[in-house]
Image (cartoon, rainbow over all chains, first blue to last red; front, side, top):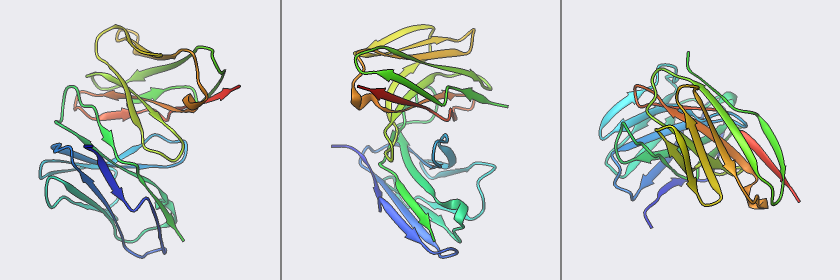
Length: 114
Length: 109
């Protein structure tokens, strides 16, 4: 089945210790998104890739970086996690950007910062 | 600024009908999505409306009025598995999804 896969599902890291979350997709979609979602809040878009074109949201902290080495994979790097970065991180894809733009979500990675 | 409003929490009874409202003020409009999100899981797509009117899909229906900046999600014949958060999201003029905080729906037997 075509899908969006995120690893790991649960990640625990130390305060200030770099961490990388991964996302892969078998949908062959052009667009990949990273969202941060805290409890009972709306998903917050961090950045997205349209093919290799990187789009950073204006209020995304510099602490968050992303890489997309190929169509299928996208990584979220948190350089120095703080306690406030504990959240669910959702990866999503869409076939194109614009007009009808259904996004398909992975199961998420729940990040705990100790 | 851009804003999506929906109730924080609603309670309904198994077998009943519930309507979850969403109002929006965004920079442009290119469609409105409803997503379902179970606790600790990712959102899953329910519906997309870009024209005024009602779209029906099984037990779920979604309505849109662009002139009023208003949508609702109607759930019929409620089942316990419908207990989840329901997120309203609008595609703005830049084709960015603007998300509401979600409505937590609690179903009681």
